[in-house]
Image (cartoon, rainbow, N blue to C red):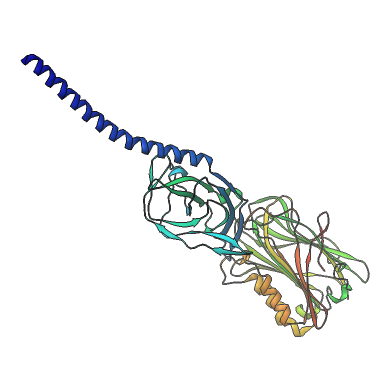
Length: 448
């Protein structure tokens, strides 16, 4: 009997241990099972989340254009009740995938929503709890976050430098934790973020057809005409590379003369037939990847003698070359054709102007136009958009006949195939008109 009792006790103890172990097993794996099931649900939610991003829009911040306003539309759909968005700008880190990028420092991107036709910035809060991926990896906490709907369209906006990317996390709160359902990033540099200038434009014709006025009112050396533009040598010119080419036709007698300014090697020359036969004159020497301002003026009221065509070359701080070229006899009207640059793309052009003077009362405004575009003392003046400044000059002084202005800088993408110029002109002494001159034919614009 004792052996039977011992056997019974062993069975009871074994049974009790088994029940205890089963209880521990059941308690542990029921908890783990709940966590695993929760992760599976979040993984499933992540797979069902849809994200679409619109094309990116840019706007360069002048005058240096080292920063850019970047915006795009974000549309997403997530199978959850609550969503939080975390946008941020980051410098890509070598060897670290975007999967692990996290916000750093203060908020540097915002979320906006279109409310009754007006873009409204959403308020953000700091999410101080740990954030996990659906697979359980822990991400950074203390991130700036925006409450959003489970499905919606939002505007993402930030100011970036070239090389930076914009990342957006889509978060949800499930089973007592914050999870990143999905993320995406956009690389503005891949879409053309940068500063572009043209190396060649079409032909611009100053024949006044678009303005419907007679040429003598606007383009005449009895008064005064001035042209100027910024250009940058992109290298050593192995063949003669045109920077600026103009043909001026005398309306009175139909005679024409041309002036061509070109780069040969690193020297700038003027080629003209204004004296009756071809003549080449040296103007100055340039350095690659430095900007230069070239100015041309002629007319009785600005040069104290209508036979002179004064051509000057400046670097960013001083005059480096000057030549006086004979224009021809006095006339009461010109037709002018202008081309900037050449197909060989040796020189870049960023902005240009043409203006005409009505009488000597406007001489100060006349030279104010050129000094405004030359714009010493301003960082990167060749990139400065002078549209408003030039408009204000002619608006306050009707002694100028007209200003034509080209701005060839495109901070967001390559220049379009068609370029235009802005024109402000007085049709009569009291009313100032504005128009945009678009391409009138293949490589042909009318500016006068």
